[in-house]
Image (tube, rainbow, N blue to C red; front, side, top):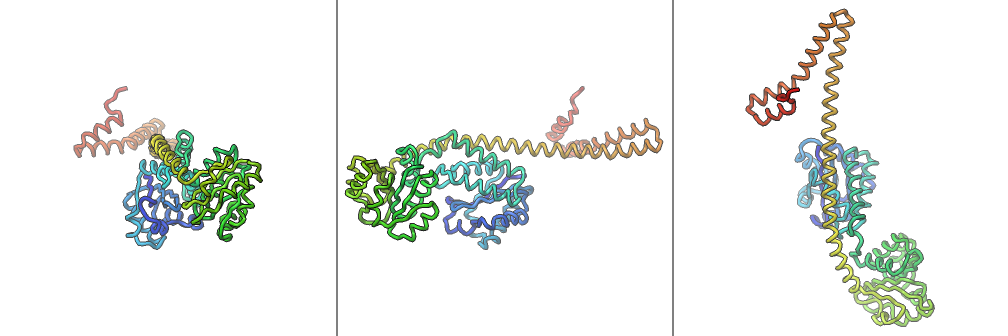
Length: 422
């Protein structure tokens, strides 16, 4: 039995290739069942995100044949030539596969080191495989152990403690300044990708109220629906500024949108209750002179970049510790798996021996019922049992001796305790 992890990610393939072999969540159950049948594996799970598609398998038999069947299945399922898929694929087997899955779950293989979203995506892959009936004992235990490792890494290291994107850093700074974001009111200026990420982080931190200001209302509304935010135009910012505890801006404007006078007026209305402001735009959206105001905490993208650079270094140091945890836990899982294989072998061997015993005992009991001499029946039973149990070891010993396999012969003598005396 082997565990195999196969996939492509942001390191091995551009998005043009990754998108061709991604899996639609709505059709994942069908894909999992097809893999079980066509790739001929015992258990399967599929992880498919914007940055990676990975297939996890438990299979018996020749791994090379499994690889060939898997590539052929991917080719047929996605209607993409194998020549497009193969150059980007990576393959991991047994402990390397286990180690890889654990590293992925911990964010050690992510585009952003230590990012937490991948763990949720792996949990979703686990649930989908469970629901599809494509997962059994080994894969189930592997995923559970992987989730445990990710939790241990998050608890015992600082891998996810430091912000490494301007969006995350902005929200992180706000969390440090405000005791709680649950009552904070936020004004987001712009509706581009950066502001969308900021909005997502704020929403995940249960921020009190979000208002989005944008030149194009329709685009802002699309984002606002997802987070329950209000939408205003840029022209309405001056009248809304006084309600904002936090202002984060990122637009493509060539001129500042928020001036010193606008913020001064908002502070008067707020009775000088402080405002935390972050300008993520280049050129700036917030006039530089705003930083001169006593009740304003203004950060620019440069301020955040210096924080991010320091945090990236902190994550790299934490990653070394995390790798140690992963290595230890993958060793532990493989020990469990070897024990499982041993247990299966012992159970099978004992079942086989007991079946032979029951078969011969049944014949002996029939002979006794038919009046055959009991001593003769017992003697015959003992002889047949001895011959039955000696047959396989004797054949193995003779084969090793005839083939001149001294090491094997010595190994068999040790197993059967031939040279040991009671």
